[in-house]
Amino acid sequence: MPRTPVEGFDLAAYAAVSAQLAGGREARDVVLARAGLDEARWLRIETTWLLRLATAALQGDLSLNQEHDTAFLAARAAGR
Image (cartoon, rainbow, N blue to C red; front, side, top):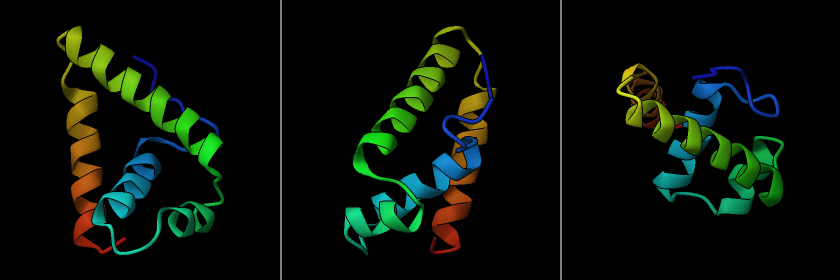
């Protein structure tokens, strides 16, 4: 499964923005703007990473999901 960045966002950067959005502390548009994103670009990035994560899991490769979970939890713990 490819791990190349999607529109400049590697898995860790994608997880960090996802964690900020999930935190709900700030408005979605504020979080996206701070990351240099608009809604359309974020949706392309998110869709691609989610498809990669799902495909890897379906193929029995959990390493990509573990990498994502680690980055997501680290971003949440850091308050990002």
